[in-house]
Length: 327
Image 1: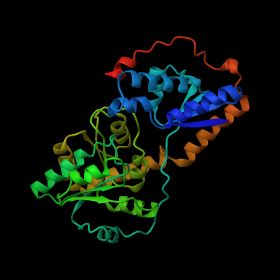
Image 2: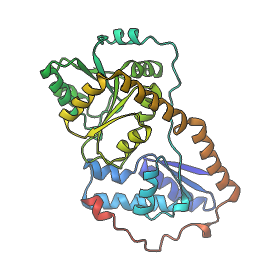
Image 3: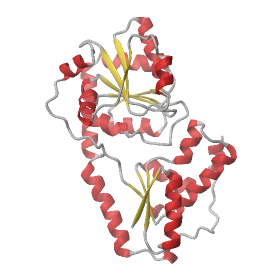
């Protein structure tokens, strides 16, 4: 069995090509975490010929696999519709959090260690700080809250390509804080000691990825505010879990309003946080996911995959999505 993970899409394509030449009867699985070329299009990192070329590689990769495993139902629909993969070759296995429960931490002590006042509404964004996250929106929301004298503290925990630019952009905003990456135990305690956990995405990002931070957010039992495309995959996930509030991407006024409303409603915050934890324990259960993946691999190994059973890549497949992506 050969399993590749996309991204990295180019490395996966090279591995699959080599496998088809040297081990043509060995089953190949592509495990899709993000839709690579959709991400390039939504973040504006590639256009025109470059995007079309990358999309051709991704299309070949997915259609060459004996099984494509995706992490969300909407990814499955995209893989079938946009890349011409047969539906029977696509399986959905949800991701799970890598964090173990951290019992016994003192919320008050954790907040004090970060110099968070007990009556501050702490809004925490944890994870990568890159183009996809569009964190300028959070900077401007913190600036707006400060100008109004609101007791809201915005905390950006993590690292990434945009970190230094964001630090410079947010210099002098008193209720904005940057935290360096911490250990898993500290990370879990920090999530659980915030009032609200924030997912922020750049305007235009809608379908490329399911934010991995959501699995950890949901496990913490804290409510989520998602500033994202209202019809996107992140919004769908938060609504499906009934774990938080969704506001439009790139709108500091809407984000601040949602934070203030949720921060002042302890009962609603508690309800949403409980829903988040329940969703993590059921839909995003680790044992269920690993068992599903094991069954997929076991079936492929047991049945074997003769070359003649694979899809015929010479057949034209109707594809109307290239223009949509290039736009």
